[in-house]
Length: 295
Image (cartoon, rainbow, N blue to C red; front, top):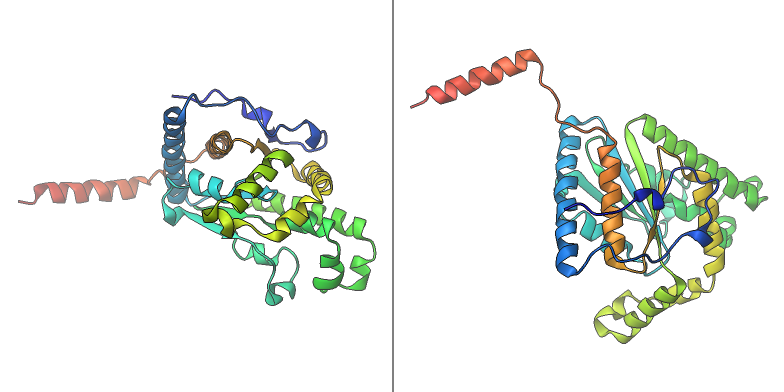
């Protein structure tokens, strides 16, 4: 059963014309009911796992999936659901929190470079180096007071963030040339839906642990964040390293779209099991003949 979906509605391969005000946070349901959703999702899991096994065997390419979003958009649950059917040996997930003192002694990309996926595996970044042109732009004191940068670098913050966007775009192109494909997801939740989810975290005892007071404070910068996301996507979306802006008000829709996008990008990598040379095939045939002759 195939999902009727045009991924071009969400894929941003060239960010120049991108306008976040036109990006949807909610679309018509892609599934009829829960059973239909589970069936569609199960099919995606099987196909993604099959391609990941080919990626592992081929050992020529890797895939990095980056997830960015406003708080309560559903990053954690999306990563958990989409990758739940993939062999854990082939997937590495990294969630980036505030930098440690040791990490602050290095450039802003360093802690991410250390955990890039090797060829043959899928890496997942739950938040990423993109925080350096999002959160840091909204809170420039992070750059001027915490990141230990030279004065000449922080003298012009507009130039600093423009340079970081260039560095990110160049880095992603470098990774792609070296066999690590990078695909980015912005899970686009509406301000109204975020409020609803925050209230649920407060009112539901089992969800209290998810709530942080700082999340509400960041909500006060909503418009600034939207502007920062728009600028970021405009400068870093390319055909080789695209962004997907995914409506996130319906979590099941969101997971189906992300699954479809991951599958689409992996299919474009032309993954296949390696073809053995004739000499090795001959050895396999001999081994089979020997085993078949055993009593």
